[in-house]
Amino acid sequence: MTDELKKISKKLSKVLKKDRYDHTLGVMYTSAALAMCYGADVQKAMTAGLLHDCGKYLSSKEQIHFCEKKKITLTESELEMPALVHAKLGAYLARHEYDINDEEILNAITYHTTGRPDMTLLEKIVYIADYIEPNRKEIPGLAAIRKIVFTDIDKAVCMSAGSTVRYLKNGGKAVDPMTINTYNFYKKKEE
Ligand SMILES: [Fe+2]
Ligand SMILES: [Fe+2]
Image (tube, helix red, strand yellow):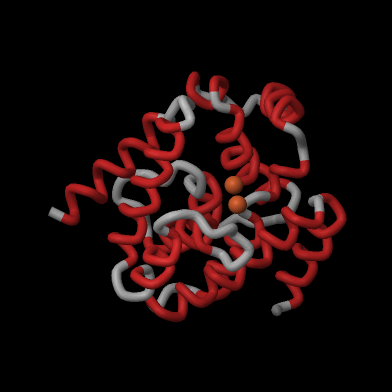
């Protein structure tokens, strides 16, 4: 790990719960592996993976308060689905508390939960790494995504967005429009 990554991980280990911190390291190393596979910048991928959930040190309620205080505008669906807020908040914290100015890294953090149509390679890497990192518990379809991601990352994005949409719908939960847009975009690409 570079000194910069070490500094960030030390800070994160102090504010995140143990499980969340372990997940964070899993996403960092999985992002590194994917960056190697696809020729993306490994350091950027590791930095984005390490910081992707940095907003989760606060509870959902506190995250919304923090955004109000800092004038971070939240969309209607973000207010309805507080699980989404930490992504935007995370990008803010990465910039202001962890001194990250690279827009590519900041966007990878912003879009790690919902994805978006036509993501950059780095965005796709962090989106998928979050889904497949080794600490994730086995869910149907995970093994297949873990396998295919190293040969066809777009297909892996399509599969994970699809299973997120199904999971939320089956649980009677609301689905963010951006998640649906992501799924539709990558499904069309498959056709
Ligand atoms: Fe997250
Ligand atoms: Fe995560």
